[in-house]
Image (tube, rainbow, N blue to C red):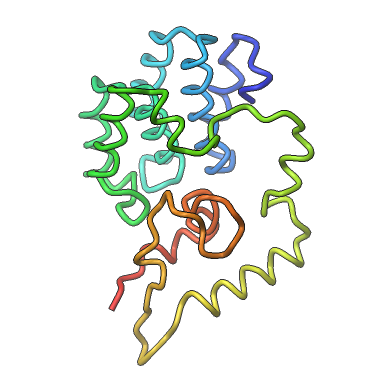
Length: 206
């Protein structure tokens, strides 16, 4: 979407504000807002206006991955003026602390304020435009055959969540959100198994 952005943000807004759209797609479209703004293709004032409005307009007003993309866009743009709204979103449970801690948000926001370019580099090309779309998407887990994805998910459940005396042990407890995913996909944990199996990250370690 960032690669084909033509200066009109309305298609992005429609996806982001559509409560029936996939929450992970909506989340990524919010990050596209930050990408095109940083590239100078969208006025910063408009991005600020929209992200502020999202606090009251995004649905559901409840825990949903779209809020993760919202705070991510705010950190990428270093929008300190919206920090109080993000803190309220944490307090209201829109952003699960199992996905991201408030301290993590504050650290990323400060990096976005101090040196946005350095923050982008931290993500190892996560927010860089890629060339061949088909070649890129062919490596994404969500585009693998359903049978393979089902088998991988079952294997993940068996190997990463152990049940002992009715208590769940979270083997992800020492995996940082920006660390390589332990499944071996080569992607960051937050963009792979954390996204695919969000419920696992909220398990209490014993």
